[in-house]
Length: 124
Image (cartoon, rainbow, N blue to C red; front, side):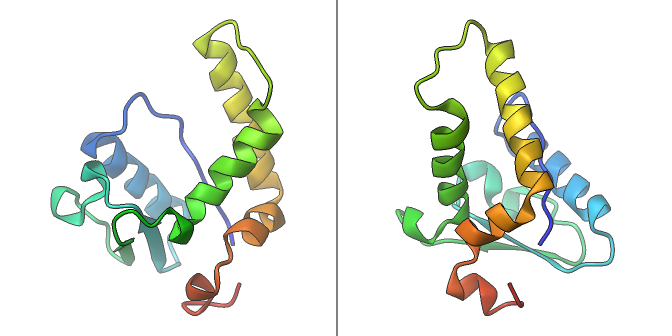
């Protein structure tokens, strides 16, 4: 699989729409199944979901089903553990390094997010 990311100023509907459009433009020939946790800014009724993209809402209170939880755990352990930052810019810089590492190493992302129920939609 492939991935993309943005570090945006807020977690709201406008930023989510911006991100969905970016994902659609980045992978124009693919059908995109995006898994999300049902946060208010992720709800399809509040979003313009691009063509050839589907948002799959997980049940409430089910972090064990959410692949992004595993990314978050890995991110904290490998890039943020036991670190004190002097500024938000330093945090953002470290986050950019981490996210680019995941893009350069899709096998890491695949190994921690390839849940059997996700792989049933496509080969992992």
